[in-house]
Image 1: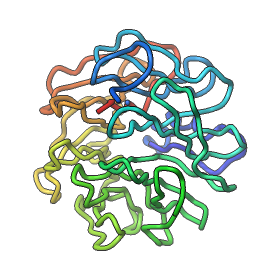
Image 2: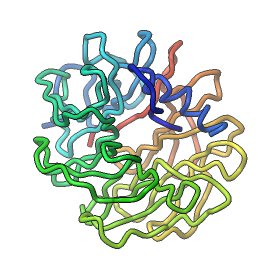
Image 3: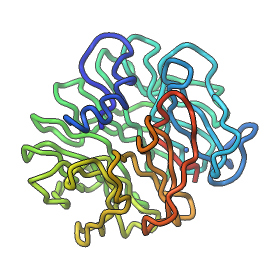
Image 4: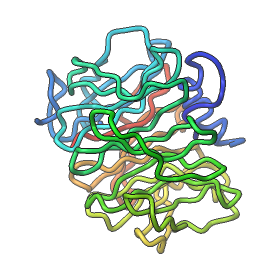
Length: 302
C-alpha cells in the first residue's frame, strides 16, 4: 500500500493502488460547496478519468462528484477540522506537493515548494498545523508545518521511511508508520516529535496507514499478518489487535466516520479497488463506489 515510488512523472499516484497492493502483495464551515452535502461527506481519490483526481460523495456513496476540473494528478485528500478546506497532494509542478483548497475545490493554494515528494497531509485537530510525509532529506520522514505552509520542520529523523501521519483527537500525539525496525510498524510520538514508541510490535508482519478513532481510544491500521492486507483495530496503547475485515481480498486505507460509528476502507474484492464502509466491529461491510478505475484514500468530512 504505497502512495508512490521513486520514478519520473505522475506515475507514483497511479501506483497508489497498483502498488497499493502490488506493494501490498509484494508488498473526506460544514464541508463547503455544492452537493454532495451532509456532515459525513467523503472525499476520495479516483482513477476513473484515466488519472488520479479528487472526488466527493455522500456517506451512502451517492452523488459522486469530481472537485478539481483539470488534468493534474491529485489525491490523498484530508479535510480541515471545520470541514471548510481540503489539503491534498498534487503533481502539477512535476513532483508531489501539498496544496489546500476550499471544500468545493476552489481557491487552491500551494503549501510546499521543493523538488521532493510531499504527500499525505494530516490536519491537527485545532486546524493550525498540517503533518505530512516528505523525502526531501532522503527517506520519507514526518514533517509538520503551519496551515499556511510556513515553518516546515521534521519531526522524525530516521535513516529509513517514516510515513502516513495521523493526529490524535486531542492534538497531543501523532501516529505514523515506520520501517526503523526492519519492517513496517505503527509508532506513536508526541506532537513535537518526542517519545517515539512502537505500539504495534509485530516484527513478523507489516503494519501501516494508522487512523486514530474520534475518541482517541483506538487506532485502525492495515496489516498483512494473515497473508493479505486487512483492516485491524487496536487500543491506542497497542493492545487488543483485532482483524475487522476478515476477507481474502486486499483491504487498506481505514478512515473513521465523523460519528465514530463506521470505518471506510478500500478493497479489491470485486476486481479493482473500491471504497467500502463497515461498522467499527467489522460488520455490515458495504460497497460505496463502483467505477472502472481504482477508488482509494477515503476521508470523512468532520
